[in-house]
Image (cartoon, rainbow, N blue to C red; front, side, top):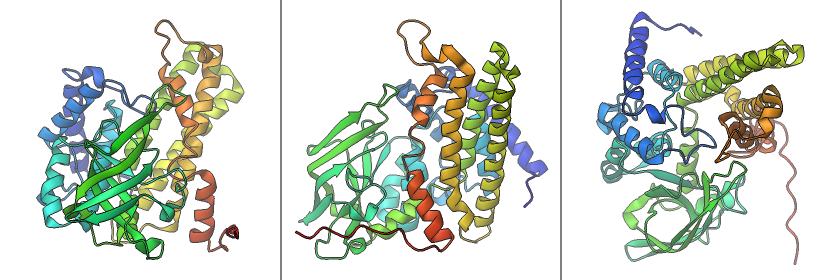
Amino acid sequence: MDLHFSAEDEAFRRDIAAWLEEQLSGEFAQVRHRGGPGDEHAVFEERLAWERRLGEAGWTCVGWPREHGGRDLSFTRQVIFYEEYARAGGPGRVGHIGETLLGPTLIAFGSEEQKRRFLPAIQRGDELWCQGYSEPNAGSDLASVQTRAELVGDEWVIHGQKVWTSGAEWADWCFVLCRSEPTAKSHEALSYLLVPMKQPGIEIRPIVQLTGTSEFSEVFYDGARTSAANLVGARGEGWKVAMGTLAFERGASTLGQQNLFANELAEIFAVAQKNGRAADPVLRQRLVDAWMGLRIMRFTALRVLGGAQTGASLGREAMITKIFWATWHRNLGKLAMDVLGPEGEIAAAEPYELGRLQAMYLFTRSDTIYAGSNQIQRNIIGERALGLPREPRAEPQKP
């Protein structure tokens, strides 16, 4: 694999880097480096304004086809954009769920009417989305969701509960996986609905985390409604559409995530040099190991994602991605606290808010749990990548 960029690509890199530097040094300077994990509540309205500035300038949805409002950038240039965005300290994107998950899903599975209705609003940053997948008893086993939808006239009526819904309190819409065919088998009983969040019959309860913030929420549906036209795909095809959505998570933005990790690692390096802990041979080795892990992550992502751009499907190597970065990032949080030493246990001054590395440490405790726990990831690798026998399933209890 060629890991070099052409002269034209490097010129593109300089152009986007200059634009980001100009924008983030002026009106939007306060959003720089804000809104990451554990910090999603920070300067939200300002970050929403930033989202719309990106939309105006055509820097949202950069990988989408031009006919749907995107720039249709090559994979290489998407990588460059996400890398420079992270390097410039671009804030956490409030529209990323719509852009990276729902938008590509509609392009692949949606009707022409759905594309016309929803894609422009995502590109402009005018409508925010959240994801209604996980439930209290259906996390890793997504096919067992119990939220149900019934078609009454020209509307779907929804009852049930979702949990760990990122950004629910700010979202305008949610794509909801629900059970619409009560007599069908598990996978064939599901449908994929687009549901407005601001309506009677929806209750949002934020979940307060170790960081003191609440990026996630419980969402209760008690007779919530959405138009029959907001069914993506056909009735009973929700599993296929939902799996398509999950596949879009593995895109070029992965490289941007890694640059955010690089920013955190650079901050830890700076602290270690300032307080003298870089001279400790054990900590120094851990810092080097973290740097090497991040490089391995980058080269693996480029190899796997780059191969997929040639028309090949994502290979078995892609299945190691989540467990690798989640474990690495969790360990980086521990390293940050060890580098900070006793200072990591106290807040600087009133109002005694967590520092960035403190918040990162607490948030990274969840990395190996959400989006598929490490235990589930090992099952996926064993069964799907290595062809090992399936994990024994508990027999249902007889009454």
